[in-house]
Length: 244
Image 1: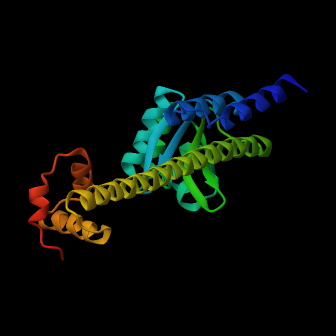
Image 2: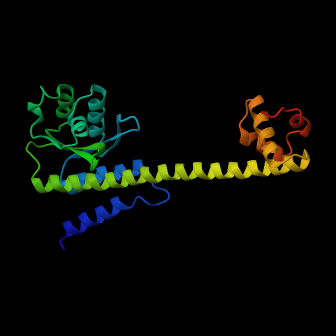
Image 3: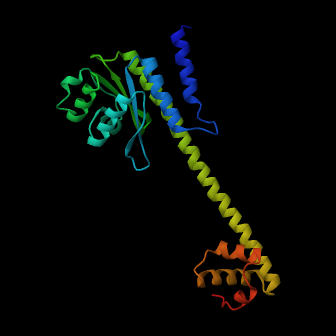
């Protein structure tokens, strides 16, 4: 295995490590931008990622010049990353000095920063596109097929990590919501038991009392139940409630 092959393998392992507890997506994408520049032989790399509204945002750039060019792209809603994101396909231009008609403001900013060619790669997983990677070169010409394939593989590996992390976050939210629901049910059952003893009523009546008091006072049922269990709610207030 050559040194280059070994380095590529190391980078893919690095990009697959998204299961750590302290995973930081910004640090992760900064690393991706640096590794793309290193392995693909381009001058700079910029990364745009869509938020939950589907709006692209600049999240990483390997150089300050690339960062400013990417901001110009977003501010003017034109450029190769936007095209790659909207179509889900790579976008390449071998000589940006001839791209004024296609992306006038982006081209002016890129050429002004010294970049003469660009390759944009979608960050995609099957039909899901989460962002795009921009590869800037200070020389004209197209990237060769092997370089583009490697670049797309890096973008895809990062996308898998991001999608997986988002899925884990959603699962954690669902799990938290379920646990909250279970905790609420336990609390309500405790409050019902407390009321059956304190008010000498049966369990069904106890629930009616809890629910009626919550509705009458525009409060959550679980909050009322908690007040009952913690002794913060006087029994006299509950006795006055008319079940309904």
